[in-house]
Amino acid sequence: MKSPAKNYDPYENVVDVMEKAVEIGHINKSMFEIIKNPQRETKVYLPIEMDDGHVEVFEGYRVQHSNIRGPFKGGIRFHPDCNLNEVKALSVWMSLKCAVANIPYGGAKGGIKVDPSKLSKGELRRLTRRYTFAIAPIIGADTDIPAPDVNTNAQTMAWVLDTYSQLAGKPSPGVVTGKPVELGGSRGRNSATGRGVYFSTKFLLQEEGKDIKDASVAIQGMGNVGSNAARIFYHRDIKVVAVSDVSGGLYKKSGLDITDISDYLETKGNLLKDYNAPGVEHITNEELLTCECDVLIPAALENQITAEVAEKVKCSYIIEAANGPTSEAGDVVLENRGIPVIPDIFANCGGVIVSYFEWVQNIQELTWSRERVNEMLADLMSKAFMDILSVKKECDCTFRMAAYIVALRKLVYAEEIKGIFP
Ligand SMILES: NC(=O)C1=CN([C@@H]2O[C@H](COP(=O)(O)OP(=O)(O)OC[C@H]3O[C@@H](n4cnc5c(N)ncnc54)[C@H](O)[C@@H]3O)[C@@H](O)[C@H]2O)C=CC1
Ligand SMILES: O=C(O)CCC(=O)C(=O)O
Image 1 (tube, rainbow, N blue to C red):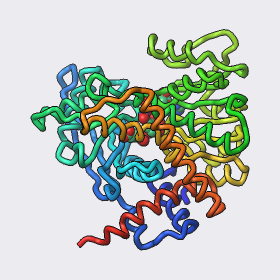
Image 2: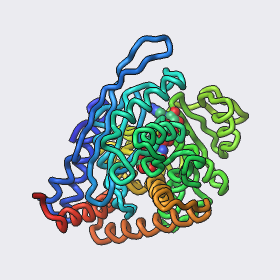
Image 3: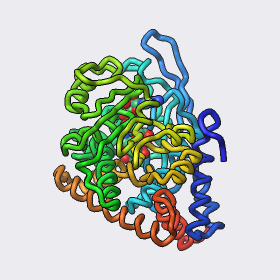
């Protein structure tokens, strides 16, 4: 096992956790060897003419982990620290997530090593189109379907869709999900991951015999996932005591005004460090992770809850809205401290579930109402949670182990019935 922080290796981390689940869940070890490695790793170099005329070359990735249960599926991330190893781990989490959610997809992930805050809108558009052009031969509505992730959104997906459709010579809405509703996106996709985070919290607290209305929540990250989750909690009168973004956090024991904070982020486009309101304290991201709250929701990046942080958290429960926010060592500490963790592969699966609904609408040329989408999301997540609970009881293990066992059994079974090729 790697020590946390600087030596953190997300791919090694996910493989270690899978290996533990293989032991506990009595999973076929030889077939698991197939699941350990991605089917294909693609690295591309993207020359872009910047606004001042000079050329910069960016590095991009698409890792296709598994398509044994259906087409590859997973988001595209723009981040200066993005690298092949991170994308590889994220692609594995996608395969596990789609299996837990019981949707007919495999797993993939893409990314570009770039700080998008330093690029103009025109530069970002050219970079996204160039990246799409480079990976076009390996994506498609029935092969690999990208979606938004960190620092990408419906606008980014509109550029991916248009570039791909130009190359295909026809509108190809099913090639990408999370696109604007006007271009074939699904109602409810934008808020789906945050909504799923709310369902995960509700299911866990119900299981623990607690009323979600009495809970206080702290959320790290106020992007697509964190801000939608915060709004959903707030509109159900659940106290959100702390939120943060990359610039720092805000804390108010009696509960923050999430509508005011969301309006500030949307209309002013400023960072939370510049937000001020009566009774609101400014805190650091580490203080957010260790603040007094019932439910802690990391919704930013990987490796936030290291062993050191895990020793200090004061929450009773953790819901992993981000992918990989808890390191393996952090997880051991939380288990020893008796703090239940709802793992990422279930807690944030609402996004890919509604992506699946979007894709189904696209290929059938249908449009569904927001109410229908939200109801179907609740239904799939509730069934998936029941599956996890049942394995948790069978194997007497943590929620993370149970979710991994549910997923790995499906992936390994699919490999077994297919048989080795050739
Ligand atoms: N967008 C989606 O539908 C899904 C996203 N996820 C995962 O959720 C997490 C967040 O994704 P999005 O909300 O889409 O990204 P986003 O780009 O919309 O927002 C990220 C947020 O995290 C903050 N942040 C960045 N670095 C930080 C740091 N070092 N400390 C604290 N805050 C920091 C940013 O300021 C921003 O508020 C990621 O792990 C992503 O992979 C998972 C499932 C689906
Ligand atoms: O909606 C999707 O296809 C995938 C979203 C994503 O990247 C994730 O769940 O981590």
